[in-house]
Amino acid sequence: VNKASSSITIFDLFEGKQIKELFLEIEPHEATIVTNPNRVIVTNYGTPDVEGKSITVINADTNTIEKTIALGESLRPHGIMPLPQPNKVGVVTDIGNHLSVVNLKTGVVEKQIATQQDYSHLLVHHPFKPLVYVTNINSGSVSVINVELDKVVKIIPCSSGTEGIDITPDGSELWVTNIKEHFISVIDTETYKTIDLIDTGKEPLRLKFSNDGKQC
Image 1 (cartoon, rainbow, N blue to C red):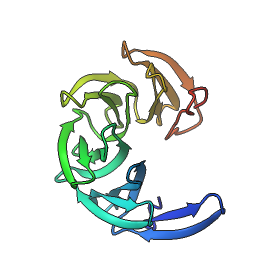
Image 2 (cartoon, rainbow, N blue to C red):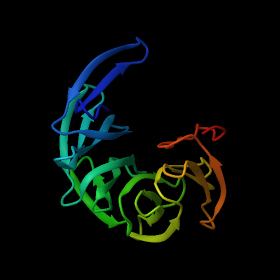
Image 3 (cartoon, rainbow, N blue to C red):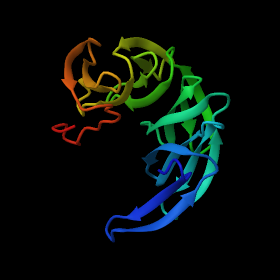
């Protein structure tokens, strides 16, 4: 994903070369994938002057743009992830502060759930429960959203600049980066309590667990 170029660069990892660049109408920020069918979905965040309000669906078999889906009045979509249901993704917007559930097949935003916090940014889904966790940069928190009940069930206070997030494969811990105070908060998903703080370098933006959960 190339922000300034407003494009998506596609590489063949086996050949070790670039095979295509797709140009978008507005600056993208994040991407995710779904399978059956294979699609790459990109959030169209926008520029300092133009607020984005859509996602782009790319056919990963043909490497072509398939469709653009508008998100209504919720602006600057950033975080995106696949949901357990087929052909559905969750999208978080910085302005509007919604978790949107989007049906990729129909192109319909099926629901928008307010995070109840400010500058909602990234998200992760619990591996076994209908819970989505959303980081909120300005509020310094994580919103816990039950996507079956369509509501926030808990606000977890973290610290200033709460941004990156991932969950352990067994669903027991959330790890959250704090870009202004330079550490990772380790949160117990049963009690919602912070059980550890791990110092990092400056501005830890993202984190991701390995499939076996042994490394992050």
